[in-house]
Amino acid sequence: MPAAGRRAHPGRVRDSPLDLRAARRIGALAVAAGWGHQYDPSEPADLTADRPLNLRSLLA
Image 1 (cartoon, rainbow, N blue to C red):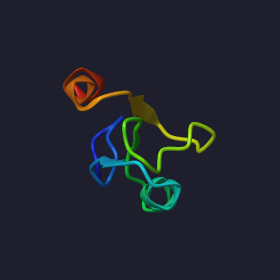
Image 2 (cartoon, helix red, strand yellow):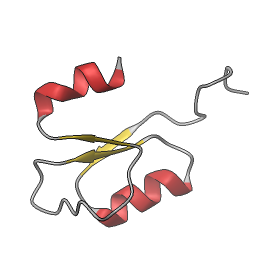
Image 3 (tube, one colour):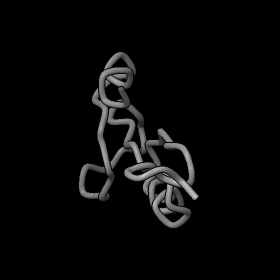
Image 4 (cartoon, one colour):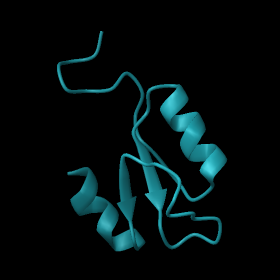
């Protein structure tokens, strides 16, 4: 069982709406890659990074 506040699955960083939905379906943290060519700002995500350099601060 995961610790309090932790998810059973690690996060997934993806730009595809289908991948973000799949991440949420398995209980993973869905992180939208806002720089990706398939990124859709209307697709719900747990977090959104506008560039790769921002991932470290988002996931810390």
